[in-house]
Image (cartoon, rainbow over all chains, first blue to last red; front, top):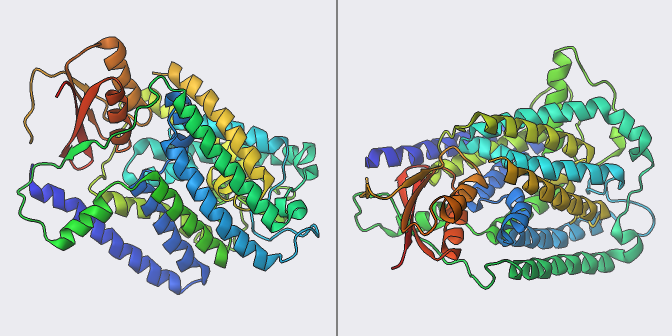
Length: 407
Length: 81
């Protein structure tokens, strides 16, 4: 093992960190929002890469392995974000119950589209091996299949946008917005949300006990580093290894992601990644002369809808998504985990593409992905977040049935 | 390069992403080569480092992870010890 080869990734990682700083300085010249979205996007990418945070694993491993390690991290993040979001919303709408909704919170129309979108997203994400945000950060880690999956997501979003007006007429236009504080007040809504999260945690524990391997606790595996000429590492090296090169737990990941989400909502809006990808797909289609035309009702919706841009590609949402990719790239290099990963079986490309298309259509229909319609919606104290979550779980179950057949 | 025991069969799951590295290892241990005393699994998918060892340990194996190159690992699965 040549030590030089090992160091090359860290050197490249430091280079990427400098580039991130440079982009930050450039972003300061533009709209005020740009540097904020950039930094929080990078933080998002860094956290999910280091904690290997994966919404797909959260749902899939419950069904595949009776294992809730990742779901616990997701639940912890939801609980933290719920408290943070409630404090922000209480400053925007001090008196709920007057049918006023907090602007920008992910309170979305609740109806057939929520359920159909969640189901499709659940199936697609298991097939593609990553949700939309997962696909973004794996792109930064060097997964070729994830680039294919993103293409699929864009195709799926294009198909949804072409059929959006039909969905709007049939259902979405008349669907209610159900924000829990309207009837329950903030205290009631927070208690109910945290209570449901607690119940979900108990259910995960109960479900794990039903595993054929119940009672088995996951031990920490011994890990030997690649053989390298080892001098006594100094304190700085030890700290670097402990913080950057050690895998963070899913709970650490979930809580840090929730903090990123709260910080973004304090200044602007909750996290969401799909609206921007939808814009990419529409813009590309537009320049190919196959635009999607006017989408009905989009202006009145929060959440992950494509935002109209004023002649520039570099919007705040673009900075967020690009930040996720670049943040994950930096984290992968600094922890020496970057590698160009090429699927060896051709059918995996079909799986990434097909899963991506189904997931993209579902994300457009459900007005968000595992981030926007779930991780940002439940803390918005919105009922649509819970319905979407249940649909995601059902979809993931179907996805597991399918994936067991595709070897 | 760490020492390699030529007698130990290797399952190469590089290029595969979740859940396939783990599913293919389980299939190896359960169906293809039940009661195999030792097995190497080579993977380039970091999450597999947290999914394969617990699954192997449930089946009574011990595990050790060894880094081969940046972004590539070999999981040593063994009976006993």
